[in-house]
Length: 383
Image (cartoon, rainbow, N blue to C red; front, side, top):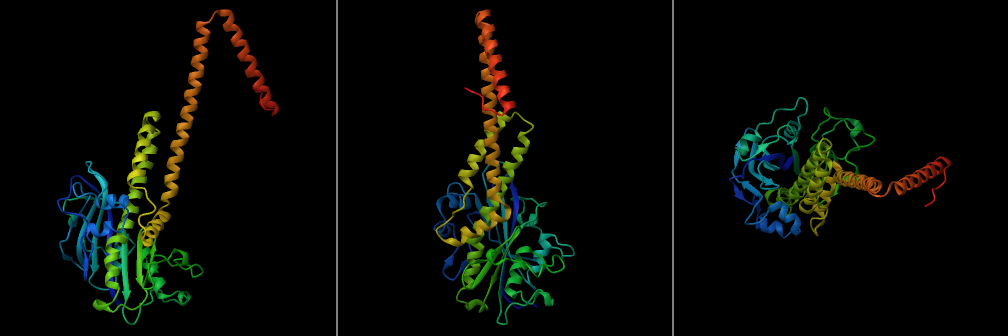
């Protein structure tokens, strides 16, 4: 059932970095003919803010790579990349492993990475591959980016049952690669076949993509002519570099928002005024460093990032954090105003003569009684 001319897979893990990786600085450099995916070439594609996050600076890198080529079981490892948010101890970040299945299709490997029931075990150990340069967050499922192209006979159908006959083979592959499922894992509803038409990102006339919660599937929609193909060699290079970078930025944003949400919950058990001030600074830092929706004048990375943000509700989550901090600050200001007013009343009663103080209290009592009466009657109190 292979009938695949080309397949590419990148597995992205959340990780922590106890120290700076001792790898070559910069992203993994891949090449197809005269095009090389260097940091300089990618920086010309992205805006300065995204470039700073994804590649760092020459004097202060935040991305490293290991180009060591190796074979582990049925998997060919092409290289490893590390992207760290900051140089603080135990800083969080990402590890991306570029690989290719040596036998069959990548679907069984994707199911293993997703932890599907009865899926074959993954033949490589991500923690062993990084060799102490990072600590993989093994409890979290990795995000996968997978690309396949058909041979001359086209893509085989993955869902053979008659109820899926109207489901084109290319759409079946997009769904299987992005969701990392087969029919036994999740039978799609024939009335609402996935992915929906508006979820498909048409990268060009030759290939389409879909971004779901834990994976991105990319499929060539015409036969691949192999090493001499006029486009698909470049397509694989783009996918493993600038398009992967857009998704990795979304993953970093998700990490940052998760940290802010955890800090919001922890703030409930602390001195709120002090904690919220610190949270405001962290939110400002997140907005300046990581938050972006427009990465480049080229449209595709923006659409890939938007699809990832939509799947994880990043915009709504960020708005919720901003709303909660704003509400807390408003309530804090109201409390401070009440305390100040109470202090003024007490100070006045203590420092003025007794007769004037009693008159003030009588006046204040009449005002409060009048306001309470207006509230009960439904009238607006007079000023």
